[in-house]
Length: 213
Image (tube, rainbow, N blue to C red; front, side, top):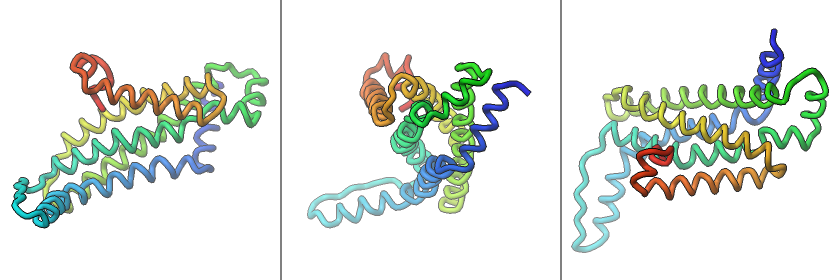
């Protein structure tokens, strides 16, 4: 068995035994559960608020499964990415501070294998949580609206997963360069908001990951 495989198994065991196995999946599942519900009740809430304003009439179309998918994608791009940034800010630096990295790297283990194993383990967690959340959203949408084509949802989620994987790579780099976990998280959040601002600029929207936010 290669050194990388040994390190990857170690990282996956650590994920199963720590809070990391719960936090990000729980957030993505919360988004998946609430998205169909919000899509269903939002038009009614808007009409209710408008009815309290004399002379204000708001006509909204009835919600559809696509509204649920849009809600899911929107929350993933906001809450989901911010949660990913914060939870992975210490992916390398926490090991350096605790001294665990030193114990591992004093053995015949390359730095590249050490970093890539951590990245691969986090990517496996992210992918598994995303697939589970997507299925939950699809089932919830089907239960509420009576129909739910999974193709559009799968395509939107796959695009988000690519962007999230990019942010995971970014956080791995930042966690290597910045010792303080809060500092790495701050830098990652700053990068997120810069991309969000660039999303409003046509060329950036077409040719950079900002277009997926």
